[in-house]
Image (cartoon, rainbow, N blue to C red; front, side, top):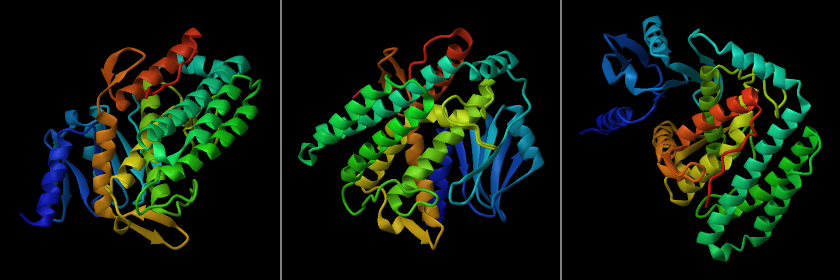
Length: 349
């Protein structure tokens, strides 16, 4: 079997089990054929899939799609995310399904409730720092020779400081200080051929930052679609400021998932040598990115991370990170509508 055939066969097998469909083959076309979607390039069918097997379609770069294919997706409630070839989210296409107007009214009403915004923002920042703390603590347990005790103690202190905040702007400073400690530790947790010069974005200057940025984009895209589907206005946030064209509420919700999902995935990919330096390329002044074949492997790893089962300590039930995305979004809705205290996602170690 030729390399291209093996790649296509592998992709087709993955489509049968993944929730998201990633289209990266440049100049290919997404079409509808009967009750199936097909991806075609020239005269070759790259894959076929039934709509009920997928939750979302992510299109990277120059991939065309027909109106009939979009109609089929909308009939199944499937959303589309449009990204650049390098993974920058440009926009999303959603069907005009009935929105939960009651939730939206409450969401807007709560925006003017300073006590609620502060309570929620403190939970968001505390959840983020706690999960950073847990990532470092777990890594330290498995690699005691790294001596990360100083960073662990510092993160513990930063976490305790959050409760004392009396206005949201204070939290930005606390979050920034904790992030500096965390990424200092994160750099020491990068083993092997890669290094980490600190968090660099817009553009990413090295492979580790490129993986972090891509993973954050993927999570943000999922959460933005999820919030919209549940009836939220994704553009109205409580911690992050309102910014034209940005789904800031997804930024709020993703904070608690950055470390346990994106950062741990990145550590796994570089420390276990899933990717090497040869899997990345650099564009002058535009940053470092995964090569196309490496990007396909990344999606397999990302899906594996989001669909891996574990016990959620809060409910003692089997779950996955993708299920937790929805669970937390529903918890946010309950907090807005019923004044319930918001408890962020915390991954036990």
